[in-house]
Amino acid sequence: MGKLLVNVFLVTFLVFLGHNVEGLGVNWGDISSHKLPPKDVVKMLQENGIKKVKLFNNDETILNALAGTGIEVMIGISNQLLKDLVNPDVAKKWVKENVTRYEPKSPKGVNITLVGVGNEPFLRDYKDTLTNVTGPALENIQNALNDAGLGDTTKATVPLNADVYLSPSWNPVPSGGFFRADIIDPLNYILKVLNKNKAPFMVNIYPFLSLFYGNGAFPFDYAFFDGVSNPLKDKDGVEYTNCFDANLDTCAAALAGAGYGNMTIMVGEMGWPTDGNNYGNVTLAEKFYKGFVSYLAKGKGSPRRPGNVEAYLFALFDEDRKSTLPGNFETHWGLYYDDGTPKFPLDLHGNKKTLVSVPNVEKLSKKWCVIKPDVKNFTDLMTYACDRADCTPLTNGSSCQSLNDAAKASYAVNAYFQNNQQKDDSCNFEGKATVTTKDPSQGTCNFTIGFKSLTSLSPSPSPLPSSDHSDAKAPSSSSSSTSPSTPKFLAFASMGISFLVSLFFM
Image 1 (cartoon, rainbow, N blue to C red):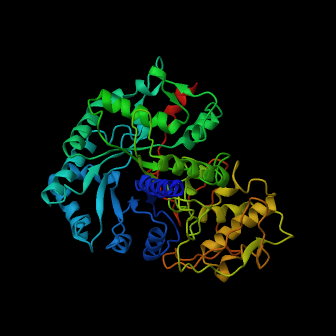
Image 2 (cartoon, rainbow, N blue to C red):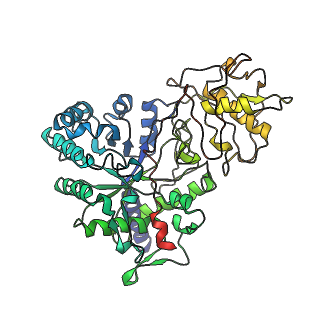
Image 3 (cartoon, helix red, strand yellow):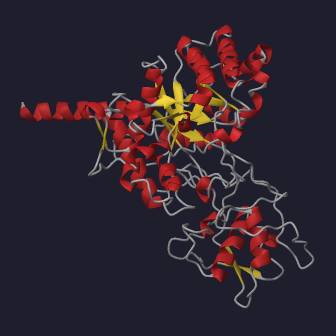
């Protein structure tokens, strides 16, 4: 009888554990020079049991690949469109072209359950340019969904940055949370629309950024889920041992103060980068993700919001064409490298099964481009290569920062070489570089090998002796530069700048 009870308990526990991570999704961005076939990515999602994805650009090939899978899909609307969507007719047309056509209610269609109207439109950097158009755009999109007969299953929301709420300096605890005074009216507009249509409030929370912007002042352990020796104490004896709970409950308090204490909160972005900063590395990312998945599996929630938490991890893949203005880590948020290989083992469902790779990815030959031994001047070739490939691992605090100058130059030309599919003329650099079959990787610095991609950029040759380098910009420790030939799009969309929680612990 005792053995039977134990077995029943174990089965119940495993079912309970699996249920509690059902709310876990991933952000699938596509600001990459080389993209994997969407059908193969979807196979990987299914194999990993990932049932929710959040998209920023509604790529038709991605949506078609998701059709018939049952995977819940959140699609996005760019901030650039918000002003146009103040016109109800434009909103109806957008819904028809981006939602209705994919038959979200059909078993064979795309299961679109959420529409993100803009992304972090109240960031102070936007200087109120989107403040008064976001609410009307949201309302018009939701009304268009309702008119199309989709409003009961497809909800519109606005993914917001965690800087929309804060606690006062005289009471810096989660229970003191309130919304920023400068956006209170447009935010109340949004809250009324969400409440009327039973849509969730979505916020992006990044403990990593609290560390990054804290410059050493933010308590390191609070960014993770392993507990702390000195928890933050709120009123009524409530204690906080991690900044995620503190941030979430600050949001909950702000909602309650606005009259929406029961509104569902969904976390739109939550992640940890693996390069580009002292805190951005594989070891800490693995620690963070394993802690967060375990946190979700327990189903305990936060003190003010007990129960399951719905969240989208950020992100699925590294995106090498993102702007690095926010930080050199911006191209390294992926759970996967851009070739579809997991960066570390992660069990999402408590079944001892770790992430599987994207199938059918064909790696290029095991060869690398390196600087010739007699070359002493690397400046021109490095600036040329780094304008056209991702050199962020070379910057301060990154995985390749300890390389000597010659090795850094080799990393740069190899990144360019692999980015151009190992074409013969992409490893020349005025005769200063050559191809080798000996792996030049050192320590934590991995000289990558590319993969065959049907969506890669048109290859460009490395500079020959007659090349004009006048447009090249030297890479710096603060950002990767941008070249007219291969622009890295200015993409603050996924960043989520929030240092507010750090105030609680100072």
